[in-house]
Amino acid sequence: MKFEASMLRDGSKMKKRNQYLGLATLGLVLAITGCTKHEKPNFVYAPDMAYSPAIKAQEEGQRMPVKGTIPRGYIPYQYAGMDAISAGRENKNPLRRTESVMARGQLMYNTYCIVCHGPQGDGDGYIVPKYPRPPSLQTEKIRNYADGSIYHIVTMGQNVMPSYATQIAPADRWAITHYIRALQRAKNPTPADVKAAEQE
Ligand code: HEC
Image 1: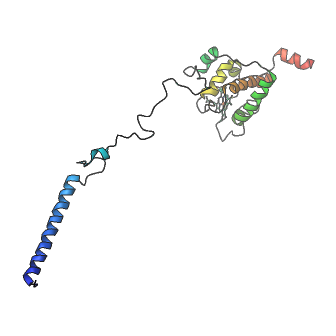
Image 2: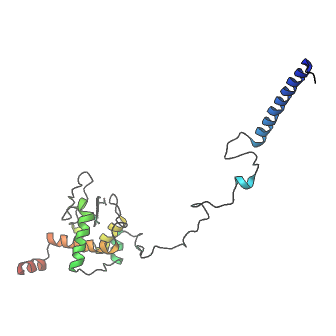
Image 3: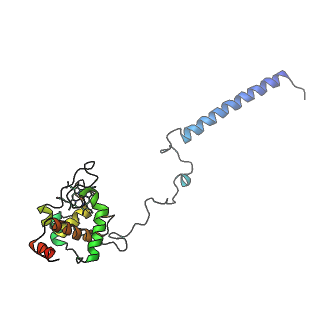
């Protein structure tokens, strides 16, 4: 076969036509699939793939514990909705004031409370005054508080004082209230306390 100029021309025409066709196809594809935002396509070619029925972990559909489920060994605090005074009336200190309870209370107080409330509960912990000075635990108000009211404040927190419910176990919170009583009586001994001390 002999090459001719006309064939060449035809060839380039064919090329042009193919180009047009290509562009048109591209345009059509773009129009169908859409150059829109990914979240909301106009047309979904394979919906089964786009919207997989598989459930992702941590997503809706995960099995949740039955309502009211609590961790093992955890006893929920029943007086959370009350004020400290009312809670104190209801919630009694279950611990007897033994030597080991007092020692535990002292250790816990010196670990968690002393930084703000000070060694005698005067509100002169070494974080003060960088941290707002807490009220004294030696006031008549706190001396007249039931143990359960102090327990309530440690459990729930009060204004700027945070809750210690996650750090201090319930029994340790009760031990702390016993120890605070000891601090209070050391500063304000009853006549019987004075007599006992004199006899010693
Ligand atoms: C980070 C500092 C901080 C720590 C730690 C802290 N407290 Fe307090 N506490 C405060 C402040 C501040 C207040 C006053 C809150 C307010 O404005 O009502 C307060 C208030 C109290 C009150 C009530 C006093 C009142 O007159 O109303 C009690 C009781 C108490 N704390 C006990 C404790 C015990 C027990 C601990 C240790 C388990 C403890 N606090 C740990 C800062 C602290």
